[in-house]
Length: 141
Length: 479
Ligand code: HEM
Ligand code: HEM
Ligand SMILES: [Fe+2]
Image (cartoon, rainbow over all chains, first blue to last red; front, side, top):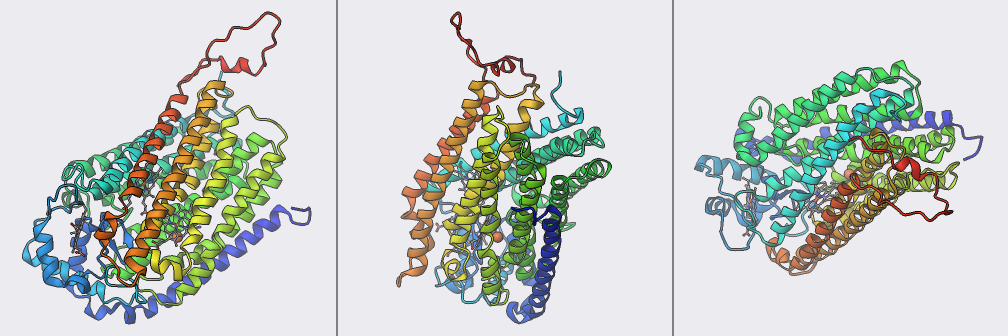
């Protein structure tokens, strides 16, 4: 780089460019937060859904599964599992773990109560209703 | 006699040693998971996959932080031309951080995660159970305290001494690291908002403020090993970090395509993140340019190799593999597949693992009281560079192949197959990945060994001239 482009010019471009980007990002974030209620249907976000999310976190389901495509890639996507399998299947499935099929990937037994299973299903149902721009491409997740 | 310009630089040594130790642990748990991918019930239920995964990723983050801290303690006194504000504080924080980290890993492995949330303060403030943020709330608070103490120590040192672009950029990166980590404490019950701000920790770290830290470390090492004028190097650095933040901030949008955020992020995120390879490309040009213009041939060949390797591998892993799946029409099919894992591995390795190994390679001989490492130690270190780097390239290639097939079979063809059915067909790639992982482990073994390697005694014929640099290598090392 030539003499005409000095270090202090580079530094000023850094400060200016960063400030501009921060403001743009904050503006977009502000607008997003404002439009979210229509997309996440928070009117359906009940106490039960919140409890379900808490169970999801305290059992670290994300350490094996993806949820809306984020998490671990060891086990099936669960953002749309409510649509794929339905609430009853989910409860039966979770109760029946681990499969103990030799050599097959295993999911632990969490010893949930029936009420807790209902909470988890409520959370997964609410999640399946988020407007995700039609992701995943098909029901397999 | 110490070779350090400022004796307080010595506090960096335990940080580097801890970093390397935890690195070994990280890789062992990676290999466990690699086996669980193909032998699903391996070590189950003693170590379920999710537990191995949090040990693997959390150890990675913690040892990289140890590396960054060691780097800062080493380079800031030298740049600022003054002793560190408080070496004692640095030592105390080291032990707090190491013990907190060790306790956390012991917690992961010894009690159920549910129990850990109870004893880890999650009922006080629910922060746990999210990817990369699995640590107990108490550990998170401990981390904030350690990082604030560290920034205070480094900050005061910078303020009282000479201010260079390198220290200013480093400090900006570190403050950003601390600020964005605060979003780890925000966990609303609305999953969409949770995810939206979760990325402020994860993306704004690796594709934002960490790039500043990386640039500063690389800049420092390049000044030392090439002797190129500081003005030139610092001008480059400003250009690189401008590119990083201007593309990376709004580029966060490449994670907002399918999590409930508005559709316009497909355009904003796509456009800005498509430009994110630029800072990494600039780093390649910068590093090669500086090494070609070098005013001296530094005897630490290994450090030069690590520096050039960092730039190239970061560009490949973050730039090329990031670009591969960053546009929304592609990401629609690859989101959350092995493509993501492929990119995650090469980017983390190429950028942050390698930059930490670069500063260790440069600083550790001096910290151990030698000008440079003996010839044989350097050769071994360069062997480990190639073994680890090439096997990481192969890990990435195998995971990419698996990811392409996975997207195809599960998401693109007209008769999509279920997740588990698809995984069964990918075993060959997972076995190959595990094999490459084993080579990586061997490379890491060679790396460790290189710290203890001495030159073999040579017989010299009468009248034969021996290169003079050799003399420094015979000095005993103090570890
Ligand atoms: C050398 C042998 C290694 C093996 C066998 C291995 C294996 C794995 C496996 C199986 C996962 C979990 C993927 C999943 O979620 O399903 C993982 C995750 C991860 N590993 Fe490794 N790993 C290795 C080395 C490394 C290294 C050297 C790094 C750092 C550069 C690293 C960084 C990561 C990261 C960042 C994740 C999270 C990835 C994501 O969420 O996309 N690993 N690793
Ligand atoms: C050194 C810098 C980088 C590191 C360490 C890194 C690391 C990662 C990791 C670990 C993930 C997985 C996160 C998760 O578990 O959900 C990820 C995702 C992603 N990265 Fe990067 N990355 C870097 C730079 C880049 C760049 C420059 C681009 C774009 C050009 C990029 C594009 C992406 C995209 C699109 C995803 C989402 C993948 C998905 O939809 O599943 N990354 N990155
Ligand atoms: Fe990102």
